[in-house]
Figure 1 (tube, rainbow, N blue to C red):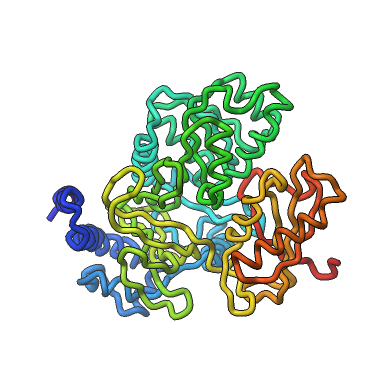
Figure 2: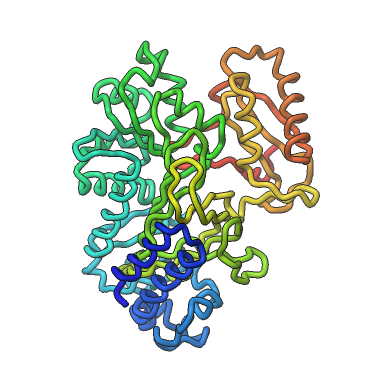
Length: 463
């Protein structure tokens, strides 16, 4: 059966809101793609040995989705960087041993910011790039972006797919992006907001939130005065945190859409309601983003409503450097059914946090975003900025958890101690962990034009 017919079967199950038939249709779509993708990868010097070690010599060896889901993860972020280093030494380029096409076929490259070492690169052939344009187009259409709309692009231009790849995708869709980038800084971004009057603004929630704070002082008017209807966020957990979401909605007077535009065909968008209801998955025929496994045992988790595990990503129709069973490190909760906001039946997922950011405090396991949620709930006495400072990499944390928090602009220094005690009490009551909070003036914690990290491991010798 062709992919088009399989998609029609999926759409019929959606129309009937038949969850078992819908999940079966998704498996059929994936199974139709997987053999060819494996055949594309098996001759590669990185993937070939891994596939053969797992008992796979050709795509036809995968007969069921259980066969595929029982395979181990073939790549992690560390493996990704090691593959790039090996290809640099062997071939003189850093695209990686897992590159499955001739170098001459690669026409586009996106990379991470590389703040912790070698950047990780994501490669595109012409087909890969056209597919990405299609996926971003689905996101834009679902959010109500129109061809011809002005989009002020404030993701870091070097920020993975949120940078130039997203900008080019906007152009392919027919919008006209203003490619300023977060690198231009807050004052320049506000100048462009006032001058260009964009209908759409895109950036990390922390950067966009900072613009709201600074607009009255620098522009003499609130950020909501400049005609923004749609806010695209990504790269950080902010839009899923109620106080952050509310600030962005009210600060711009706009609908806020959380996004996930990952590599190898991934595209997901939540539907812009008052509350975050999970990211609608938009790329069934191009990638398998939420193949969930237990992060400890690595065993597959049954895919059903409410399932939670680490996402294993596989590109299903990708040429250049396909992620095949790529351990993302993202902890996802799957939602199957009708969205409570938009009423659409389908698959959504919520990002709980990074598996390697999980904090284990005396047996209580929490993600840093839970602490941020507490701090955000105390606005405007805090401004939401925080940094969790650890003595050693997670997960194990010796209590109390040290948290540096910026006070709100109107909070006097003599009130810092009492506010710190209140935050400690809130963390203890809501999260059941002890914390030691250190209040600092606004602007103390370094900002980033890329993804803002909530956790920092203390340097050796740091007091």
